[in-house]
Length: 238
Image (cartoon, rainbow, N blue to C red; front, side, top):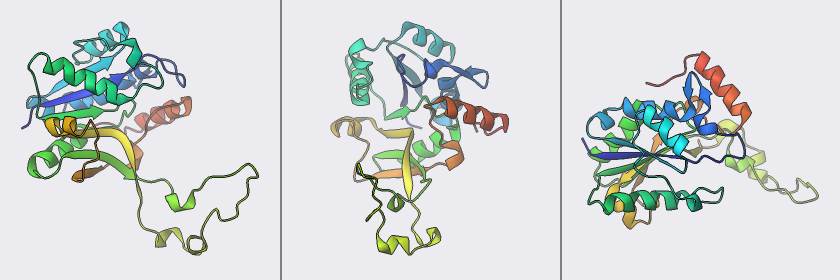
């Protein structure tokens, strides 16, 4: 098995839901559900490391209680609403490079996706191990609605040309199946990922399809309520 660094980025500031990353749900902090999936995966047990990249000492302490290492605190300049994840990834890479350490794979695990499973992670890692041409694996799920049913609106709210005549005349069953990126799981080859400027989209990136019911990304009070409902139905981790 490959040596994998699993990183979770936990920013302490959140305008939508205060402290959502550490807010309890299902008896543990939100991020800990995805962290548990990492710790239960074969990829982790075969030489993986779970790192939480955070700007908060409080968050770091909670992360350590749930099996993660927190070897540094991210600078405040990388913890604003507009801070790109690229900067946090680069900071993590440089931290290990300065210490002469590297990994075979780098995985970014979304803290707000509590229904990610160890099976999802192992499928992604196995794909990279077995298909040498593949440079990255990105989680997707079937789109809620076909994007051809979507468009922008101007200030008049006119629906003229909102949908093409061809699309208006088709039933949903006649349309192709569309997928959207979930953000839950992204894994790439360590060296290739850096060369590609931390961009997941190589010509040889491959999709990991995750069931839509498990692709919830919590970003609102409504999402928390729905996730709680799903957990009560035992839609959990495998």
